[in-house]
Structures are given as C-alpha cells and as structure tokens.
Image (cartoon, rainbow, N blue to C red; front, side, top):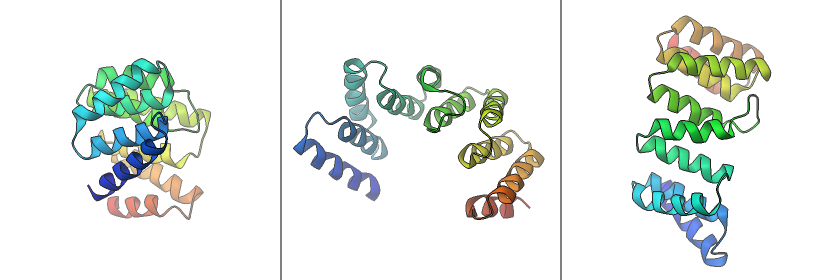
Length: 168
C-alpha cells in the first residue's frame, strides 16, 4: 500500500498543477485501485472513458479495473480493441490473457500468446506469460521448455533462471 499511497501523492501533485492531465488522472485511478478504493477509481475512469472514447490508455486502465471487479468479459472487449499481435506494448495482451483465464479459456490464451510470439519472437515478457500460462494449465514440460528457451537466448534474464530453478 505504501507504493500506492506514494503514487496517489504524485498524482495529486500533478493534478494540482494541471487538473486535466490524463497521465495524472490515470495514475490516480491506478493508485485508488491499489488502495482498495475501486468505486472511486471506477467513477474517475468512467468519466474519462465517456470523455475520451477509444483512448487506449483509458481503455486499458478501465479494462484492468474490470478484471479486478470480476468483469472479465467486459475487460476482454476493451483489451481486444487495442491488441495488435506483436505490438511493443504488452499491456493489451496481458489484460486479454488475464481475461481469458478468468473465463476459463486458458487454451485460447496460450494459442494467442503463441501466435503473438510467432509474429515477434523472443519477447521475454510474452514468453514469461506463456511459461506461466503453461504452468497454470498443468503443462509443466512446456513451461520448462519455454523457460529454458528464455534462459538460452537471454542469459542475463534472472527472472527466467529463478523460475526455472523453482520448477526443476
């Protein structure tokens, strides 16, 4: 909670200087969610969502709020609207994968990540999501294989090595 309190202070400072600053408003919404004040975050994000329809940053933050409030089908729509296979920003894919898992569509989430990696291979964040998804669906061998691939192609990636050590 300390980090969220600090984020809220930063957001308040930004909004004091520039009340309409979108980044400050999104930071505030994220901090509110982290502090367990989801209703306040939802009010803020709903206003932004109506004021800026189709804005990716607003939609993504709103989608993650929907996930936290156990509305995965609604979140999925928002994430799908902003997901492009192989894109640099992995937030839409991450949210989409979470939404699919919450709806018990783990296999679909895995296929989505595999297709993403086929388009843009060796993206460690997506590979790590895939390894975790394999593990969550009971495919330990596939998870190990994915982690070994990360370790081989990115020897400096400690997260993959630690995870690999935990599973071996």
